[in-house]
Image (tube, rainbow, N blue to C red; front, side):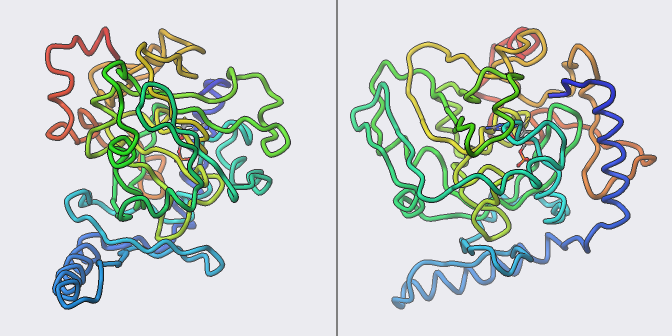
Length: 334
Ligand code: MTE
């Protein structure tokens, strides 16, 4: 991240200004959620009458060719803020396997083949298994959740994801008492990923969580966005989303989920341990050594000259996550 440092920060500003000019109409989130909740209410009644489970997404991808992934909106996990336009969510990305520029992933990720795809769930568990992505899609009811997404570089978005809690998979895996951490290992195939030729990071990209973090209800095993399967640049076909942590913790295009006893090595922490901690919880009080984390720029909304918005502790998810870090010095465990 920010490897080409100052230059990258300037480029980010230019991108924001451009997307401000071309921004698509943003959605009235509140109205849509109310609509979805109303629809879900009807569906519950329908379920009792034998119509089956609620299946309503409040957000639809404008890409007519995209494979749709309809899911009931879980209003408990919908942040009441304007959702970032689809165009920005799918063209302003970090996915270094496809290049380090923000538009590189959307331009280069066409070579990724997200189907068929297998994910190995292994390590300190009673039920190791290699899942096919189609099987994982059906493992638990899909939900639509609208989360804040804060990148360590200082920009943010609000994104309607589709997935289900990682806890659903963990429950089936049955971790042993030795499972203290979960590691996510992502695809590193030079034939599909041109960026792998550049040894910026120690490929494959890898991330990790403590077991309680992995089991937290916010932790979303994610297969879709905007009511469609994930576009390649957003981490197709499967990623995690951890809205209280900086975006780099949310590993894309996962091929292995491994349960381990020791804290696993993770890509950015290995690259620069003093800059990117293992926890990387969003924290406006702990600056990155080279820039402040107190504020952020909302992509597609905040112009270059608009005052930045204040970053919230745990990205605003404190009530759901703060208890996991009680007693920990968050300056030390940043
Ligand atoms: N996963 C992989 N495999 N490779 C990456 O380069 N970048 C991370 C994270 N997951 C990255 C990754 C970073 S830095 C961020 S901010 C988010 O993905 C970006 O997710 P988005 O492009 O969907 O917004």
